[in-house]
Length: 86
Image 1: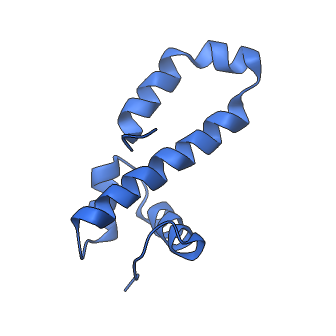
Image 2: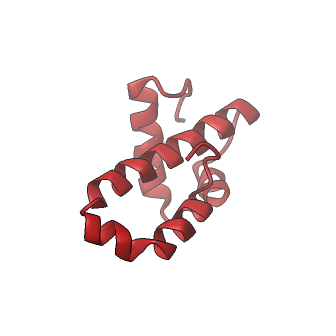
């Protein structure tokens, strides 16, 4: 979670999926996934003064630009990052 690597997080979830389902931790996994994305987004914001949403998708290994736009807007609204969407 601290690294902000969605790819590593997804691999860990797939490796331990049966244990998470057995323990009923799906909502926790969803919240952790959002934290991984926000951490990755914070790291990107530190490194770049201007970056496209498509580039953010590529750096986070995320599939949808529309979803990333929503995630970035929510992170801005929540105060997790300081940014502007053009």
